[in-house]
Length: 149
Image 1 (cartoon, rainbow, N blue to C red):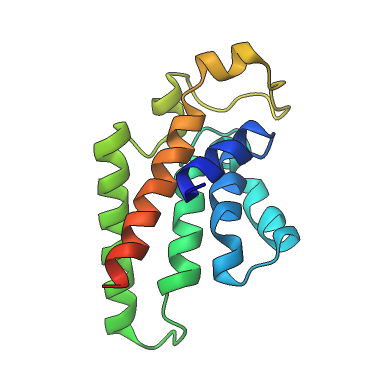
Image 2 (image 1 turned 90 degrees about the horizontal axis):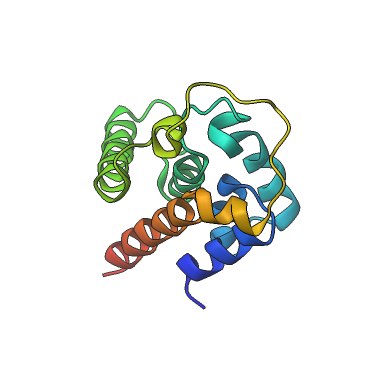
């Protein structure tokens, strides 16, 4: 199973969009599952169902940060290079999905009730979230593959 398939399966098992992406890559990042789940939880639903930045995209950035972010806060060159990577990832996600904003991807207005919707067959039919999770994982797989060459 590739990372895209793994992330989608995790999402369909009930993990939020951000958790599903981070968990798909956690082992190779040396991140234990419990820490990954706690770290990513607030970002689901566009940050706690505020419908702001897409949780799948937030999970993508967590993986990119853990893998590539500079450790020295004074290294301006490395920080600039990392921010350039973030912007490239945002463009790749937008190109595939049209936006990085949850409410735009879902076609809803603003924050939603904080109680997550029950995951039913209907839920998965009307929400593109599994596709967003898959897209984020696919972008990360390409990034990791390209950087190993």
